[in-house]
Image (cartoon, rainbow, N blue to C red; front, side, top):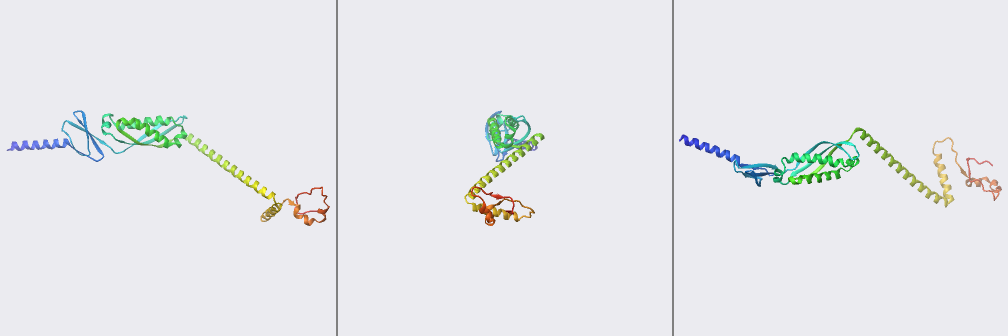
Length: 271
């Protein structure tokens, strides 16, 4: 009786061990690549997976998107400027079979491909493009890396240049260039403003020249504006047309052939 119990106990333990070796539970985002005697047979999961003990071997593959940080890469741009660039890559496995069969470690392989492609693509770009055209460079990096990882069943969805570090002397040069550009724009704006103002003044002068009375009114307005300020001495031209009615005989004595002075440069007229 004792021998039977021992045998039965051993049988139960072996059954439990074999059941533990043959039963796997996979999450929703996991897949199982099963090899039977070294040969790929099928892709299983998610849920409960039954394996043949000592015959089947299973590799778990996650289908979730992986965030891969690309280490700092020293790149020399097309215009011979050394920069340090960091980036981040987002990818996921779309074919679990190929990700196990075609490459030994798809995570390490994708990281190496991303690093070499980053140096290659950015080495062909100039510094200005690297700083101002990141979206285009990101798209180029994504396309090139995705083409190389596609045989492994890996889909690269996004590549983003995270940080660009340039030398201190180049930073100062860029700052001086930006300052000069702002000064150039300010001068252009001032020149445009002066041009527009001169055009308006020319139009106003043309309108005033058609009616002398308008010129006299404008002159009187200018005198009023000058008089409202706290000035001790003001020298201004005085049109004789304004004071001719007060000059009496002098205006009549002026010969017809003689052109009188248009302006007198004193506020007081002396006969």
